[in-house]
Amino acid sequence: MATTENTNIVIFGASGDLTQRKLIPALYQLFASNLLPEKFTVLGVSRSGYSDESFRDKLHKALEDSENVDSVTLSRFIEHLYYLSIDPSDSSQYGKLKARLDDLGQAHGTGANNLFYLATPPSLYGLIPQYLAEQGLNKESDGWKRLIVEKPFGYNTASANELDDVIHEKFKESQLYRIDHYLGKETVQNLLVFRFSNGMFEPLWNRNFIDYVEITGGEFLGVEGRGGYYDGSGAVRDMFQNHLLQVLAMATMEPPSAIRADAIRDEVAKVMQSFQPLSDDDLKKNLVLGQYTASEVRGEMLPGYREEPGVSDESRTETYVGLKMFIDNWRWNGVPFYVRTGKRLPTRVTEVVIHFKKTPHPVFGKDAPENKLIIRIQPDEGIQMSFGLKKPGAGFEAQEVSMQFHYQSLEEATLLTAYERLLLDAVKGDATLFARSDAVKACWEFVEPILEYKEHPDALFGYAAGTWGPKEADDLLKNDDRAWR
Ligand code: NDP
Ligand code: BG6
Image (cartoon, rainbow, N blue to C red; front, side):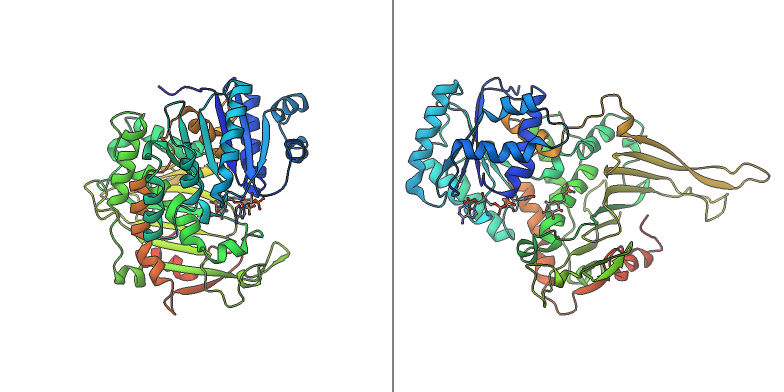
């Protein structure tokens, strides 16, 4: 059973954007909700020359005007923060880290339970665990040691496997927590509860009753000053290989034997290993890669991707990916999954849409409404079920109506943010919502042909910023007599 034991949380990359924008605010909220252990410290580690005081000041300023921050609670929280200036790529400096952790453990009674969070450039993800191990900071005889690794976990199959191998030399898989922040989202977790706590949906959740499934992960935002990183990554690596395929797995996995990390992660890995490998023909017919071009949206002129800072003006990096794919197993054989994600789409929306098969005999005409279940991951988290009803008045015409549930309407509607939930789980030692090695591997193997196809001269289509991607992505469904919702 997971418990919240006293802990030292060590953040590598403590002077960076992720630490300030996500990690520290998440830790503050957990502290304010009394969810952190009674005794804990947060030790920020990076090269910048902060002292404990100046690190605390910087984060105090960053948080003080945020929503839901209480000044008294913030001051109490800030006292738990410490800073150590070392270069994490220099093994000779890790003795200082060990000494500092020993001191903090003794002074605060936090002992030797250490959670290491790697929020540095990914080139350090393999090195830091080695250097920690040189100081014995992987050994669990005096307290547990856990390692959270930020995304991206590898750049392709080979580099992900290599990173795995290097980390596994010093840390066991059970000590490793690979972040995919989509798994921390309440509504992604709800896919499991919704599917497996309701007898009425699960019997229909298969090829006999489902016609096709859409998964959309759309963003209105562009690359937001991250052009340098994004141009070397692209939508396939940034969103598709991890977040979208995780959502797909949660929507399609078999029921776990128990709500336990390994039971759930076994089923996730199994379904990912059943994604039908993409053939050359699939890449030509069922894959659409796009890149946004400049366009005026709601009165504002948005730059094209190639005009973004940090992006090459000849870049062929995709900011959109749409794919029709299949899952080769008993439950899903023959059911198409249309999965798309993109930047600079008309709006921010992540949803799963289940389209049920039409009735066997169309007594109300071929245009009678179909049954759809829309699981809205974000924003306005909720579920909508669409069905046909008699149109009031003369005759027997069917019209589409819907029943909706919005998370906002729950009395206890304060949802933990993804980083709050994942940090809390890591502190408790619950790895259920972290990506396991076999799952990450299966996803890289699945997208590998796309990564190779990206280089093809005809692979990339343009789309105007503020539209739903290249027209060729609509054709993916139109050719099957279907349409995106
Ligand atoms: P930043 O560039 O803002 O911060 C990087 C951090 O790493 C800084 O603390 C920096 O500190 C340290 N660092 C940079 N270069 C080196 C180096 N060569 N050697 C040692 N330390 C270095 O990046 P982010 O905070 O945005 O991202 C951190 C990680 O998290 C990345 O891997 C990113 O992919 C991932 N991530 C970020 C997200 C975000 O929203 N920002 C979202 C999801 C993942 P110093 O220079 O002081 O050493
Ligand atoms: C990150 C990607 O992992 O997820 C970003 O690097 C993307 O490019 C972000 O914008 C989307 O996350 P969310 O939670 O805003 O949907």
